[in-house]
Image 1 (cartoon, rainbow, N blue to C red):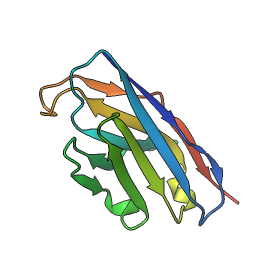
Image 2 (cartoon, rainbow, N blue to C red):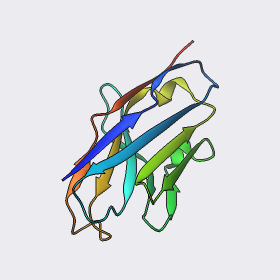
Image 3 (cartoon, one colour):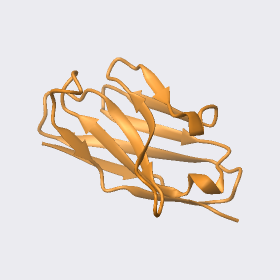
Image 4 (cartoon, rainbow, N blue to C red):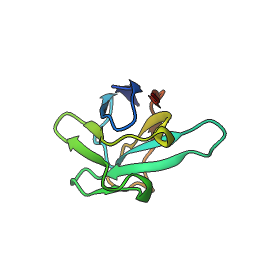
Length: 120
């Protein structure tokens, strides 16, 4: 079993920055891919960024150039550095992880989410 705990959300003005963290804990052998998703009111959950246990990172088109995902593989923590935030970035941000190097084979886990609100 894997528990994911997010932190770092809050209220920020447009153009500001926030850094989210997600730490994995529990009884597991290895964490594979870790991702950030977000869900705004009335919208579907959207993949924001993804990073493998080997450090291969990708970000979605809507946040490219503004958000950066990174990972402390030794401690199974991922970060989402969010810069130049816009009101449309307002959403609940969820951490996701798979407990296998093969994302199609392992069990999937979700954090409880952290609210990010971008408003003046």
